[in-house]
Image (cartoon, rainbow, N blue to C red; front, side, top):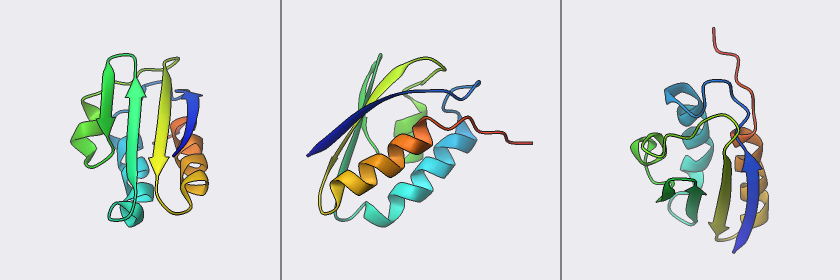
Length: 90
């Protein structure tokens, strides 16, 4: 298992659009990896966009990403970058 803790930087937190980007990146690994996101209000498996949205992740909050599976370090780093991205959706 590989873990990484990051800080949410997006002004509006992890709402629908950032969640969609994160889920799109994780989708190819869903069958072979277990991805767990732990935040201030609990933890959720990254299995559906609703699981991620219900965490209510806000700017400035820390989350820990835990990945188990082949190339777990690579996937964890990729997801960490997305959670730290300051999205600029028009």
